[in-house]
Structures are given as C-alpha cells and as structure tokens.
Length: 363
Image (cartoon, rainbow, N blue to C red):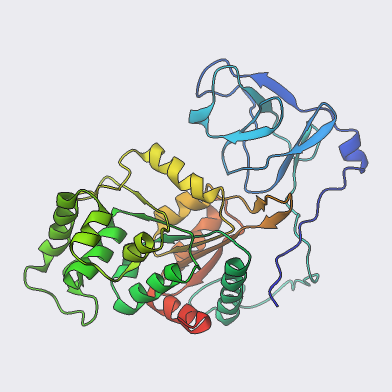
C-alpha cells in the first residue's frame, strides 16, 4: 500500500527556536531590487520568526525572495519585488537570524547504514530501475485516487514513436495528468503525427522518411496558424489521437513556451519568457508530482520553481515528487546539480519508459 512520507514539523519548544530573534525586515527602496543581504529561498520548507511567531512560507521556490505582507510570508521572484515591500534580510539558516531552513523534514522509515566503500551508488545506465518504476506506478495510482496534481514536462522525442505517443495520450485521458508543460516542438510534432502521420517528416509508425518530409512540420504549423488555434485545427482537420488532442478533449491545460530557434510558433506558444514562466508556476504551485522527459531545459526550468513540499488545503504538508527521465546520464542527473536535490533521475529513452508505465497502469 503506497504511503506518502510524513512531514515532521520543527520542535518550536527547543531553545534555538525560543531564543531566536525576530527576523530582520528591510523595506525595498526600488522595484525589482532587494535590500543588501537579502535572504534567498531554497527548495526546502523555510520558517521566519515575526513578532515571536514562526511562519512557514506556504508557497515557495528556489532562488526567490521572502516578503512579509503583514499577515504571511510571500515568496516572489526579483522581478516581482515592489517598492516598499518588507523583505527578509539574513543569510543564516539555523534560527540565529530568525530564519530556519527545515531540510530534514520527512520521517524516515528506517535509518540507512552507509558503507565507507560501496559499488553502484550513482544513477547510470547500469542502475536497476525496477524499484523506481514500481514506486512511480504506485505513486501515480495514489495521485489519481487522492486528487493529486501531476505535471508532465515533455520533450519532442515523445511524439516520435507511435506507441509512446499513444500511451501519453492514455495517461492524459485516464486522469494521471493534470497539466502538460512543453515547448513549440512537442506540440508541433505531436500534431504533425495526427495530421500527416509523421514527426519531422519521419513516419511515427514505420520510421520511413516521407517525400519532402522536411516540409511536414512547417505545413502543420501553417495549417494551425490558418485555423487560428490548436483547438480549431484539431476540430477542422478531425485529428483524433495524440498528446495535445487528449489535452484538448479532456480539458487538461498545457503550457507551451517558445525559444529563440522556434519556427512558427503555434498560436498558443508563449513568446515572452516571463509570461510563460508565470504560466508554468501557476501549475507548479499546485503540483504534487512532476515528471520531466527528454527535455533538459524545460525540466530544469520547472525544477527550479518546484519546492520539495506542498501545503494542502487541509493544512497538511506532503512531499512533492520529481522525476527526470532521459537517455543521457548527464541530463538525468543534472537537475540535482542545479539545486533540486530531491529529483530522481531515470536513465532510459522515453519510448521504453512509457512502455514500462503502460504495463503497470494497464494502458
């Protein structure tokens, strides 16, 4: 039976909490600029002592700034600091400045005994991922049964294989996905598959190159832009399969962010990076599980906005699970190097990953 890790609250009766001073709050003198020695948030739960009471930052993200609004701690990006905001100042994490970073916050079922010398400690092509698949499948079932919010971050490779594309569509249709984050390419090639049976001109079933196939994704973009929307294109061209099709059919939101090299892009693609970032964060704020596949930059961007915890509506705190799936060991493990220490890497191609999930979820 799957169980979430239990949150262990700090013991505020300990001397270090009782004797801690109130945190220092300094007024921001200028928009988008924090006072010197400002505090920057991490992925962990963080508490701030104000007027003798410890306050948890309920909605956090890495590399942002805590601001006291008179009632609660808000965590904002630098670009969202306003003149006059009362910003938390101090860079210690041990209560000495009224700031406590609660890193050891999850109850351990058993105490691991570490060897001084051991083999196979990294996550690589040689790692056995059977347990990871089992845990992820049980997690997805748990999320579906308990109204979790699972966010999938998808790279275009997922649309290149007809079976991987089908399985992702079923994951969306059957309630294992509450939001999709991607770029122009994933949507373009997925819709190209439903429109012309190819992705970048290569057959998604037989892998045969279509004659003048290098035009196919451009023809797809052009057709969608002619209709004026992805939904209009799907309805007008009777598209009946795929990832974006299932998002539209089942009212699952998708966020498409543009890049410098985009051709097109599609009408729904965010062309302004910070507007797109806000759209991503609107889903990350609700996420209980995040799964990134075959897209290093989009997954790292999402990971940098995802804390290790989520405060639920009933006041309980639960972990946020994060997976990064890629055929490259470097990519699968890179997120931890960028501060998302709780992310778990699975080294495999997305086609095999989706087939393993399919068997466990009976898709």
